Image (cartoon, rainbow, N blue to C red):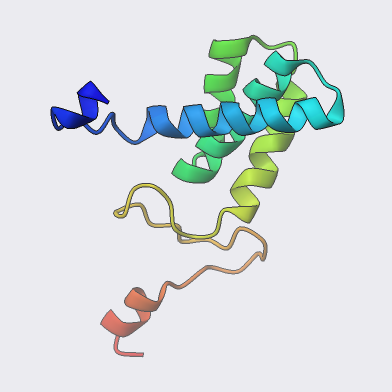
Length: 116
């Protein structure tokens, strides 16, 4: 509270880490999984969905939690990236390819500037 009162927001990434780890810890309790594992999967999945960078998210998961669960981290990143849509945490990031289809994704603003 003191940090927020002084005007510091805390950034964009750390709050997404907290939300993801908290969600993972809650859900793994319902699935009877180890708390640390659920928090790790939740943290990486929310981070991947927020920044739309699955490769960076997988590398981060290995750096933070080790390579023991690398296939599961990769699977969670693939699902999160696919379901996150075409807008992320950073407004200037442009996703040019469809996440589901094999065709090129044409954003609305690109069509408007092309005169279509």
